[in-house]
Length: 138
Length: 99
Image (cartoon, rainbow over the protein chains, first blue to last red):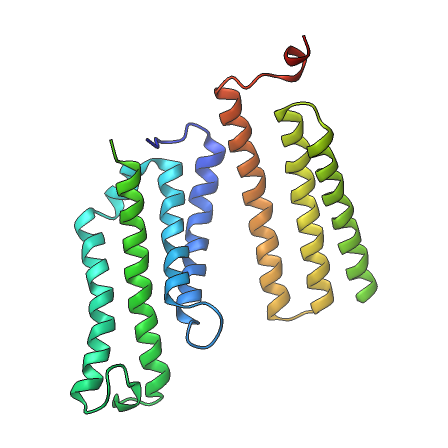
């Protein structure tokens, strides 16, 4: 069972580094369709910042900031975004995930970006909830 | 610029090798931590600065310097956390081990 760290050095570093790790995770997600990285990798980096916060401040602090229902909602919302973009392409008369059919400028690039964001949200939320289940297991 | 990069990377490799030697040669957990923690931080930092010098002033070198800043904060904290938890779990100190 992880509890709040007594060492002020560890706590301060966790607090200072977590936002930078989150920004890097978002960077990896957003650049996924044009450079190495992507939704899964960025989502895992995003989740690792919450794991770091849980190590520094205890799992209760992270659960207070992101309640369990919100995690579940994020997990579902990401999948829904992915499937929604795919089905939207079907409804517009193309194949599943055929982004070219979307009525947007640079439809393929934007469609891929939407998919990556959906995967990132789902992976980050699922990782954090798996971590919570593991550390609160009696 | 290349000469500067070679100098930085060589200095970094020297510190990394020193840290590895300390890790093998020192007698107990804390002295090994002492050797590897500081030498690895400085060694990796120098290697990264050397690579940034080699790349030149660009977005890539800025990213490399950001990684260096991250390691400069994160590595000593990790060393501190490991050494602290070892001390709290009554890991024996070196002179006591000798007796």
